[in-house]
Amino acid sequence: MAAHITSEDALVLVQDREARNRQHIRIWLYVVLVVLATIVFVGGATRMTGSGLSITEWKPIHGIIPPIGYDQWMEEFDKYRQIPQYQQLNKGMSLFEFKQIFWWEWSHRFLARGVGFLVALPLAFFWLTGRLERRLRWPMIGILALGGLQGAVGWWMVASGLAVRVDVSQYRLATHLTLACIIFAAVMYVARGLAVYTEKPADRPIQRFSGWLVVLVFIQIYLGALVAGLDAGLSYNTWPLMDGSIIPGDMFPIQPIWHNFFENPKTVQFVHRIFAYFVFAMAIWHAFSTTRMAPETTHARRAVFFALLVAAQAAIGITTLLMQVPIGLGLLHQLFAIVLLGFAVAHWRATKGAYPLETKIVQGN
Image (cartoon, rainbow, N blue to C red):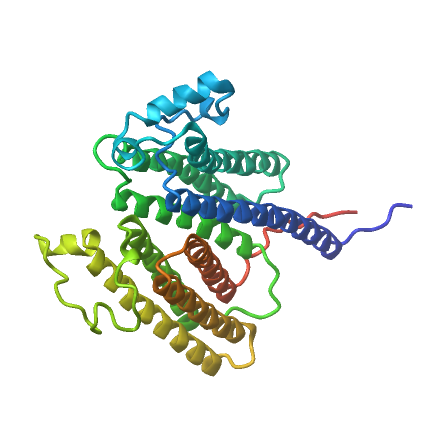
């Protein structure tokens, strides 16, 4: 005799299946996040070692195969020797030295290509097998499209250093890093929307403020990219004073004045410092206000932890500045910025709760 299945039983079965699907998709997205963070880390190493212009062509498909044999290596090396960076900074570089910078750039591009497959193939599988919720389809397509755009932006950045400059444009570098962070944040937002939360969503003021903190972190990362692109961290290596003053002089020598905020190393570093203080103050305020409005909740604990992360990032940044940006600390500062952004987005999503389940009640007999 067949067992009678009630609508309530059917609902439980559907919800269990959706919960398992969400868990699998969430694990996949966490793997994507790790790879994205690795790409940012390798990209930072590529910039700090002066390796970003070592590959002078954009070959999205063929470029996945590195040079094989002496002749192919010399072909790549000859192309590099035609650009200003070699002629003005690295003239006389040996083939062995060229290989060292080449592998950094090749690794960065290889990982960037690889993450495209890491997103596209599982996305197709989850979609075609009915495991991907309808609400997630267009956001994931959007993330995949942003990844393709990021590849084009990366080449646009590299191209700025191949003809006249010996490095890449700080404007394009900041755009490249910021777009990478947007992709990272979008993946984190979707992943945490599929998580299981035991507490109810926070009140709207907490949700809004946590969202604005994400915006502030984005702005600070953009400002940090300008600092990196101008090598502004290699000068004015004192703290809390800068050039002997709280507010240094001669910050606006370039006309029109607004260019100083993007092209004058002193002004760019000062703005990065001041905005860091502002982000820290807002994080402290958020921790206190959330603890007052939602005491003894996970929302409050996350807010406090976020403030601690901001303090840690500030300490890393100050130490990096005082030591004149050694590669290890510079990379740690950049990687920790991604960690901070990821936690800010996760906290924001948690204050809103998970996506509602898309259940369909199946009647049985």
